Figure (cartoon, rainbow, N blue to C red):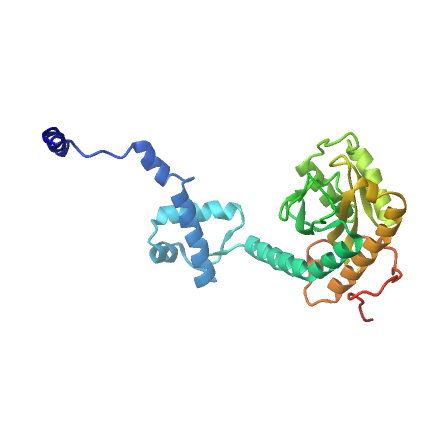
Length: 313
């Protein structure tokens, strides 16, 4: 006990520990979390108190040093998150926020509107079904329903990107995108070889996409995973703009021959019904993509069963 007390007395006389200069720099540097938090505060403050605020107002309202606020605003301008009005030099939220907001509303509306169609298609087909949409980074899985009858080891989760060149859902969208946008997706995502049947070149993929447009649906035959195949059809807004693809995937043995001949019309029917349903809805789903030259769905499909998705004319 006496030794412990003596040691404690000695520590009282020691100088206080100084914070490392490197830690100071980490807290105050432009890439630190504190800088990110200040930038987020500026964005939220502009959104809630705008439409426009001066640098002095932003600095005073948020108690942020004026030079720091200016630096953060300039950085956000580069990403079009912030705009500076040249007439009064005040700041406002950039058009990028409007674009992202529109896409968020679109995705949520599209997912909720399409969900009943996915549920029914999965029930009737007995296969896993998915809804893919074109996005800034590629072809995104917006929703999916997995079949209890299939064991799929390579699965694109909701929010993840479909490999653009070797999945039916992605090819169904690429085939109806403007050529420049389709190429941008491919160049951004690459063309990795997953199996011996993966399409290896842009030239061969172009032939496949031309065939996809002519027949109205896309296929993949063990291009992503051995033993797994899929089919997909585009969802078109008012007959001309691709906004999504309705896909079906399962074991190859269930997507060949007579089984495939039954499932393709089923898929096309649901894609056509979903296209018609969305085109009549209140949301302007067609604002996502530029107009295409022509539609390739090929007219109305014949109804071969009673369905809760029958649409009145």
